[in-house]
Image (cartoon, rainbow, N blue to C red; front, side, top):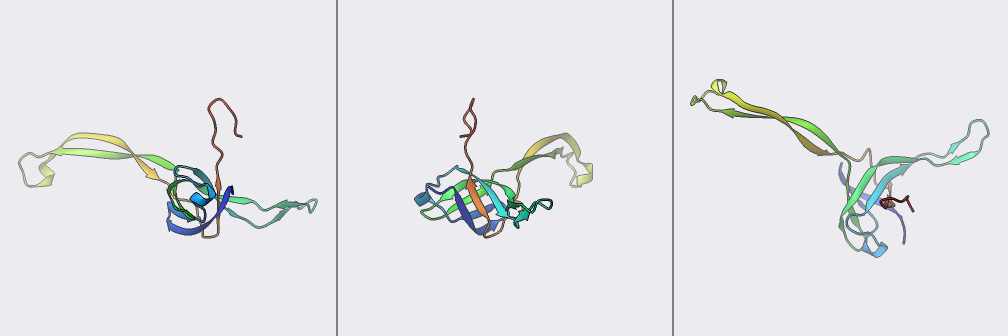
Length: 136
């Protein structure tokens, strides 16, 4: 069963499609690392080939799966405080005469975008961690 798939479509900054589906064992909820490949690198001192670096674009979770395709959504979120104000009308039609009754902040969860994901990038299944254990 393959662990690495090609990104074939960018739906939005937070969603993309990979060329792998139920046929390859991809399932709803699976987590993936999204990455591109950089240029081959060499050690400048020894000339040794160091390989090709993986350029991390983010992580995502399968939200829809078909036989040969799967849709992934970024699973990175950020909580940002948002001010909520409620006002009480004084009977006036002019907003300036309304007095605030309550002001507080709520945390709004914002889904973060993949960092420059492109068609041709890759998605690799992430190994799940078991409680009390180490990665397989």
